[in-house]
Image (cartoon, rainbow, N blue to C red; front, side, top):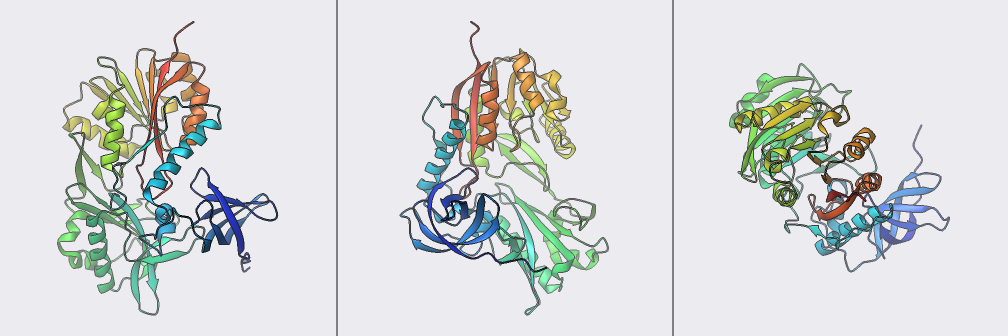
Length: 436
C-alpha cells in the first residue's frame, strides 16, 4: 500500500517546546510541531505525521524570517543531526535556559537562582563520536556516508558533518575512499562508528551485515588505518551498532583521554562523554558540593568519569552495563584505586542498599530519569545531599518534585553539552531540609 502524502500547510509559529520543535496552531485548531522553523516565523510545512490532536512536520519554505535565523552550516543535513543550526548561538542559549525554566514550572518549582546555560562558545567540531550510515548511488556505483532524514526512514548522503572533530572527518573520508576502491556495495554495510580523543587519535568500527564479509581483502587495503579499527558483524535484525561477532580487530582500538587530569581508557563502542571541555566544567561545579571525608555513591556511573574524578576517596560506582563496568574496573585498577573505589554491576534500583543516610549521592540517569524505587529509597534513607545531573530537565523536574518533601534546591546550572541541538544538561544540588 502506498503511503498517503499529506498536503503542505502555512502556519505562523509561536514558541519552542521541550524536545526542540517549534509549535503553531493550524486553522483546524490542531497543534503543529515543526523542525526548521523559529518563533514568529510564517512558514510552509510539509507534514510528516498526523495524529488526532497534533501534526508534526518539516519547514520547506520560510515566508517571514526571524531576526534570530542564520544560515545552517550543513544546509542539506542539519535537520538530521543538529536542527538548531538555524538560530544564532545567543538565541540557542536563551532557549535552552527557557526550556529548563518551563520544565520546572510544569511541576510548580521555582528555581532559586537565575537560570543560565554554560557554554565554552565552541559551536562546531566538538563531537568526539559520530556514527554514520551509508548511501549507495546506483548511477555512479559509489558509496557515500549518510544520515537518516528526520521524520522518515530515508537517508541523505553527506560529505561530512560540521559537528565532528576534524580527526573524525578525516578518517571517515579515508575509510570511504577505500570502500569505494574495493567496490563494496551499500547492501553489505550497516554503519561506521568513529571516535577521537583530544590528541587527535581515532578508533573506528565498521559494522557489516554479512558474517562472511571479505575481511581478508579490505584490511590490507586500509593500510595503517586498519590498526585502529575493527570490522564487526552485526545481525541485520538488530539495531545498527550491536556487536554480534568481531571479524577483525586492530592493535590500537582502545583510546585514552584525561578528564580533570584523571586518565581514562575506553573502547570505541563504550560509554564516554561527547563534549569533554563542557563536561569538565560540570564536574568542577559538582565537585564543589562533594563533602570531604564522606563516602559517595555514584549511581548510573557509566565508566566512572564522575565518581573517579570528583567522588572523593571512598566512592561506590553503580552501573548496569557490563561493558561499561569492565572499562570502569580497568580504570580503577590503572588508577591504583582498588582500595578507595568500588565498581558494582547492577541496575541502580537493584543496588538500593548503597543509598544510606551517611553518603553523598550522585545521580546521572538516562533520559527517563530516576527509577521509582531509587526515589523511594532516597526519601527513606534521606542522605544530606543529592547531586543530580540530568540530560532531560523534564524528568529531572518530575523527580525533584517527588523529592521535595525532604529536599530543597540549593544550587543549579545548565550546560550546553551539545551545541546546535536542542539537548540540555542540567545540574541540581539538593540539600536535606532542616527537621522541624
